[in-house]
Length: 337
Image 1: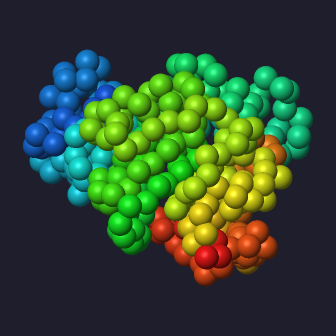
Image 2: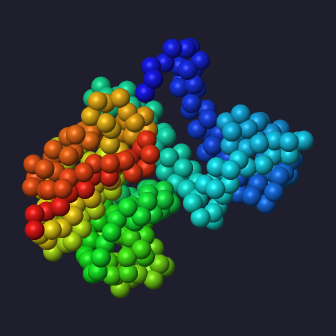
Image 3: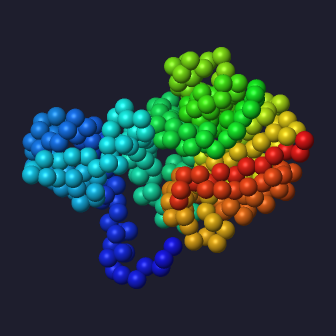
């Protein structure tokens, strides 16, 4: 990352929250979805959203300044990125993930980051995911939005893997099954067991049924940090799990994966991971900071520590490589045959 030299570069960081809220508001009022039908005026979009024309124009002007929409002769259109990723029903749409999880849950939590870093937050301000997901509505909001956000990474993971023949996968903290469903569709002889909290599993079974995979994907309800994992696995996948649990749990999670795997089996850890030099990537570092606002005991992972931890636990052929550019990495290792 190039060190900053100008005041306006600092301003871009300080005022970045304004752009975030403009994006969340546009998703709330379905601006991008409505623009998918073609260029439209502020008046037309305001009528569809049920808000005042002047307020819609103010929002659209902000979106144009951000590059999310374009404007020509008083009519607004989606940018190519907005058309591809923010229109409801688009193949790569992750707008609901941004609107619901990032906008409604994660964004407000960052308001307490100073207290989290100082260690002065009260018990009511921080919770484990077990506590959080014991609330059925919180579990629904988080899980359904996370499902939308995980489909893209799951597709990337499927492209990077080679699974020949029958295989059994354990998806630890697998949520509503975005990764398990995507991988099972990509590899017809793969079966999966997902470990997650009961309120999440209740939702996940509906996604699995809708995908027509109830015969190949099952749930083991419970807290993965507290319960034993089913053994005899060819693959153990942990995606976005390490970033949301206390750092002291990381070695035990790796050890549990080793125990659950067959000889020759693979561990896959997908998460926000920074370079060992701790200069970035920026998005990976910021996401871990966000997790710290909710779980102060969470720990920022770097690629060198992760590789060493896997080797220490007895895994060979260890690699840690980027998966989502500038945001996540995929660590992989094999249990000795």
